Amino acid sequence: MSPSHYYIYYPVRIGLEADLARVLYNAQSDLQARTGVVGRFLRRADDPWTWMEIYENVADVPAFDTALEEAIERHGLLRFVDEGGRRHTERFVPCA
Image (tube, rainbow, N blue to C red; front, side, top):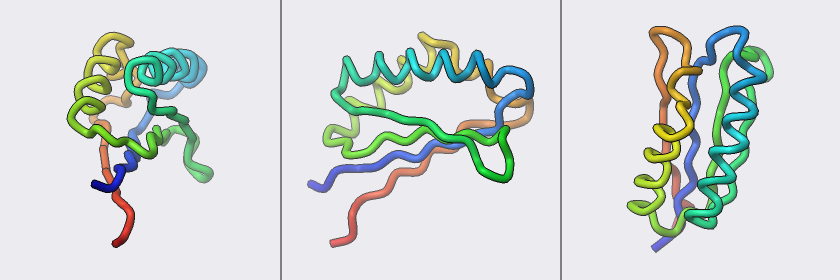
């Protein structure tokens, strides 16, 4: 089975960028320790309040999904999502 690549984007509450960066760093370190998947995060070039988390080469999708949901809860990531916004998760696989 091909590995999956996750792209998760969401609007950030203005003024919380520095706190979010610290929390995301910790959450991604936690995820890497639990799953071996290295994450990174970016912000949109033309909209600094839209952020994206990227997790590539996920081999065990069910285990990663569980670990990701637990990390979101444990690190309180939803408190950084702008009111009325939500985390959008898209998963891609290599073309055959």
